[in-house]
Amino acid sequence: MDEHYDVIILGTGLTECILSGLLSTEGKRVLHMDRNDYYGGETASLNLTQLFRRFDKTYDGSELGRDRDYNVDLIPKFMMAEGEIVKFLLHTGVTRYLDFKQIAGSFVYKDGKISHMPTNEAEAVVSPMLGLVEKRRLQKFFEFIQGYKEDDESTHDGVQLNAITMAELYNKFGLEPATQDLIGHAMALQLDDSYLTQPARQSIDKIILYITSMARYGKSPYIYPLHGLGELPQSFARLSAIHGGTYMMGYGPDEIVYEGGVATGIRSNGEVAKADIVICDPSYATDKVRTTSKVVRAICLLTHPIPNTDNADSCQIVLPQNQLGRKHDIYVACVSDAHKVCPKDMYLAIVSTIVETDTPEKEIEAGLELLGNIREKFVSVLDVQEPLEDGSKDHVYISRSYDATSHFETVCDNVKELYRRVTGNDLVLKPKNTTDKEDE
Image (cartoon, rainbow, N blue to C red; front, side, top):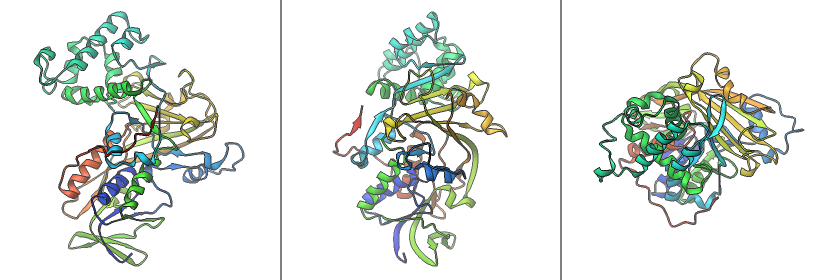
């Protein structure tokens, strides 16, 4: 290990593995280390033995099926079919290592019931969640945003999306607060209501992403990698290794080494590996990060599909904050044996939200109640952390923790941000000529 590298990366979370793959393919000499003996960090997918061990529970292996049939995600996220993570996959060509399956349904919680989320004019007209007048208003809203062209003022109806707030745009169409919740939280997937006072453009872009992703396959806007989300960091790690990246698993650093306040490498078991740049997740540089919030997640093993979802083998359910008297939404993500993450007739559901009180598990009760009988439950409360500085002074570039969003858009933003800081260049994503292996 006593060698010099261009970059040392600590932790094999998705953010770190994407950067490892990108930098390796650009000719950088990369050393990638992880204290765990498995890839993925907080974005890993674990078998049953690993899952029970992580939560200090005993697994006797007698009733839940074979250990190797499980790939349980620690963090629940789905891929928007037209989202940034798909562009990363196509840019790097790692789609050749992966297979995908569509998520079967996208639902929203309203007035104590689960309903399909309407995503276009036709669905708005028939949705049981809306009254007759409100259906027409929502239909006009969808027509407006899908017909809006930046360079054609005839489509603007007097609206400049960068100048008007989202609240003002809602009011222009007379949309009721409950309908605003559906649009802002179940389609734009905003975490809270702060978006209402921000320029409408960013929310409209998110809604269009949802609609275009939905249009690609129907049923839902989401796709998911077979064998679990842990396949994503592993695939980027494989890309890095093919291009010369060195991997050391179960071999964490004792410390980051500095000279004159600037990182020059890492020390582990008495050996020193040198590098001009160190990239890591927050757990490897705890003195250089701050906690911004906490996320509570409950991983649940079920023996049945989630009730009232038309027996869907997979789905996402959004419980908007205002339906529950909260400040943040609750998300429910469910996958099954159809995605090769558990045995036949088993389902994996994860309920999560941003913590607001000193009783986090109680905060997700509304989501847990939707699941029906729960066979096993594993609850965690984790800090969401971000770096104190940008890394330009000490050459330690720290990623952000994985937030409560149900998709990868913020992860991709963080990758682009770190890439720009490390290389000084913007990341331009261009699809490689690879075979698209997505499974509809």
